[in-house]
Every structure is written in structure tokens, then in C-alpha cells.
Amino acid sequence: MKTETFNLPLPGTRVQKDSCGLSRRIIALVIDILILDIIAFAPFASTFVKSFPGSIKDNLTLMRGSIPSNILFIFIFLSILAFIYFTLFQYYFSQTFGMRIVKIKVAGNITFLTSIARSALSLPFFPFYLFWIIEPIAIIYRKQGLIEQWTQTETIIT
Image (cartoon, rainbow, N blue to C red; front, side, top):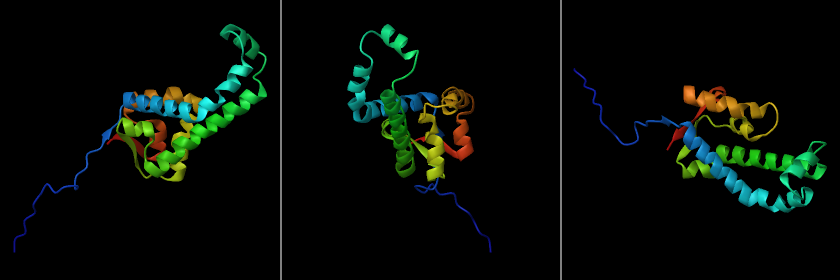
């Protein structure tokens, strides 16, 4: 008895995943920052204006000594808020609003821990801000960031 195998092009059986380049990721990040700015950061704008009256030059001179405690608290609070935004949206929906607009998403085994690791880039504290330089270089040369390699996830075009 002879058996034959057929390669039928059935729908949904083959999925091609295209890695996302740096430009789409940057556009998605800018959109997400604008959304965060409108929703979360704007209410604190008056505090910044009150704390830093005058010209930019005067404010830079004032800040050489130390940053006022209320500004430092707001900065830390907003950084954590951005971190939570990126973590929860990547965990629950595999994409943020910005990623959805530019049609990219996170693929792979997305756990809460991998979402936390991927969102660490949003924290403007040492050593996380070093990845602001390292990740784009890795994406340009490897099409995948270092954190994506460590978490075994990738950002793909949908």
C-alpha cells in the first residue's frame, strides 16, 4: 500500500513572522510617550512650572545644587507609572497603544517576568538607561535586542 502526502495551502497553517526594525519601534515609543504625556504627565506640569520659574539658564544654574524633593518624587512616580504602563500592556495585550498603531507586537513566551524585563528600558535610572544605547545598536545589527534575546521574545510586524 502506497501513501502519498499532500502539501495543501490550508489557511492558518503557515505563519510568517517578520522581525520589526528600529524605525517602527521608535515611532511606537514616541506615540506611547505622547499618550503618557497627555494622560499622566500633564497634571504635574504646573508643579514643574512653579518649581522652576524663570529662564532655562536660571533653572539649570538652580539645579546644579540639588533637585527639589517634590520634583524628584514626581520624577520617580512618573517613571514607575510608565514602567507599569509598558509592563501591563505587553503582558495582557502583547502590545502598547503605540505598537498597535504601527502594527507591531511582542511574540514568544510572554510571562509577567518577561514583561517586566522588557519594560525595564522605560526606567531612567542606572543601569537601565545604558540599554537606551545598547538596544538600538543590537536591533540594527541583529534585528533583535539583547533583552529580547534574554527573554526569548521578539517584536514582530502584525
